[in-house]
Length: 143
Image (cartoon, rainbow, N blue to C red; front, side, top):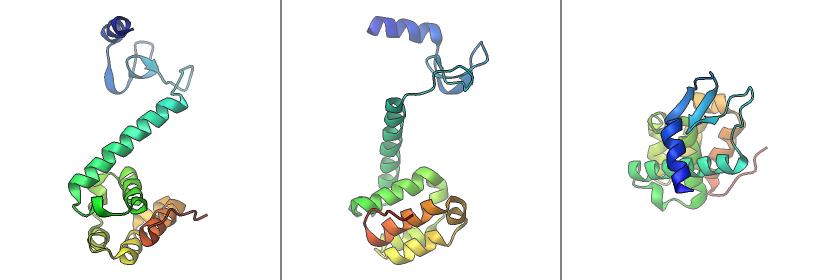
């Protein structure tokens, strides 16, 4: 199997971003055709694998960026991961009042600051669910 993989890697080439192959199809990785017109896309397992990798990457970013992150309970860590996943770390860092409140264990203020933002207006229900997790330290089923 490794020899075949090496051969395909060499012959197909690779890219870390989506590109158009010689047949003008949207392609990723080592020649994976994900084009909406006739591509095979990604399986549920592959999407879960990518999501898990992204969650781990974001969790590491938050841990390196905020000394208080690792001492949060899991639901609050999950809420922060959700926020960072959605916003990206540079945009998340602009929520200075909310982040200060998080560092001070003032979760009501943090939740209120996140809700008082353009982000909350843009994402709607997601904002309510995530901020309730920050506020209560429990997973939220806000509908």
